[in-house]
Structures are given as C-alpha cells and as structure tokens.
Image (tube, rainbow, N blue to C red; front, side, top):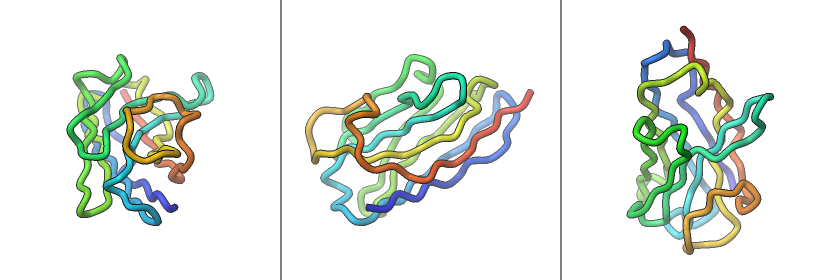
Length: 125
C-alpha cells in the first residue's frame, strides 16, 4: 500500500489549503480513510475520517466547521479542505488507511495500518 500526501505549505491565519492523498495497492473504494496530524507537543492526533462511500464523516472537535474531508473513488484520492486556518493547526498532516475494509469510521490511530509520508502545514500570523 502506498499513500502519497500533498498540498501542504505556508499559509496565513484565516487562509485555506487543500490536502490530497493518493492511494494505491488496495481497492480504495472498499476502505474508509483518515487524516491525522502530528506536533511535538500533542503527538499524532485524529483530524477527520470518511467512510468508504463518502456518505459519512467524522471530525475532531477542534476542526469541526472549518475542515471538510471528501473522496473521489475513481481517482483513488482523499482530500482535506482546510478553511479558517489557525496557528494551532500547524502540524505535519498524515493520511491513513485502516486495517479492515468497510465497517464503521475509525478515529483511533491504532486502527490504521498504513500511513502516508506526511505533508507540513504551517500557519503564520
């Protein structure tokens, strides 16, 4: 399994970025997908997840109403649209694929088996 994340960069507070994650090596449309982020202070924390069909999503409280996760199964890609970015959103963002197909949305990092390489998002004042 390969997960290739992209789209990170430097943005001013209040701005927007869209992250992408291209997957290969699995039947993408059979798997839920997740986004996590990592900082030295908080470690790796859940950000958002989407089910295999795109019909259900989950978000961390800290990003609800600002971030939107979506997917395009024909392109084997999951996205994270980030709006109204805050300084505390600065982190390395990782996409992840869980151990098992279908099922409920998973928000624990322990339930994910495959991780992308990470893309750095820096929010400046």
